[in-house]
Image (cartoon, rainbow, N blue to C red; front, side, top):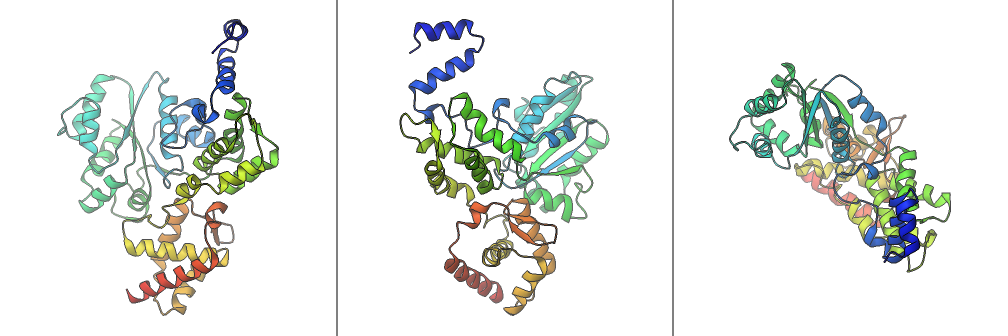
Length: 382
């Protein structure tokens, strides 16, 4: 309900949105109007924070190809959608976002642009060029790992077409994925993606952006943290991973009792131990479709939990001590995969530590020791 005084403030006060938000916040449960998006790519500019340097590298240059690599929930989709929003106002550029999700690139694009599902890639680009005559065409292709995996198994036919279209200046691409994209672009010498475009690795959000993400949406609802140290603790625990910052803030809102307007230590403690946070941290043990690679990833993580850090040399020695012939290349790939997934972070001395302190806190020491020995035993038998 909006009373007469609020209507006057709404109509002539000059800040209609803020007046409405104050009324909503006063009369509804905060969780019903939560400003935090905890799933999917951010589509609203007001909910997008940071990544200024990455955006500048893409927007403020002549058209080029980019390969956006990173684990799930790190912000690849949000970055692509931010690029699309910024390019939408460019008079000489047309930008389309395509969420792929399976290996069928051409059919997915064809249906999105109103063409027959059997239309080849070249014809799709011809159709778009005819529709937007004289404008640069940029295609943002998201969730493309299954496509790269299929291309690797089938001779890179469509990837060769993408490269040809780009070299002819007919279209530019921004491709987003995780390990299959990285392996295709960096590890496979025969791949058409080698030197296809600049690799943009998505990691943690800038600290200042994390602080804005944690506090600005709350401020609009006249809510806030009890002190700055709580915000710092939240940011540190999340490892500056944007979706974890949002989830923790959402869980803090859930923990507020009716009438409470300030997030205190007890609310943050409850958020840090919530099931939503545990669910967000899950999945690191299955970063590849190759079971042997996943097992090696788990060994690396369990060893890092035990020792506090790890390195290529230390891991090779661990395998050797259990009678396992260590494959240096496989170990390098495991460390790269865990780094891309933002599970581990490489430091200057060459050692790897956890990127997210919350993840390390999930493990019980006795349980980790048992799991590590089990994985090593299975790897030894294999």
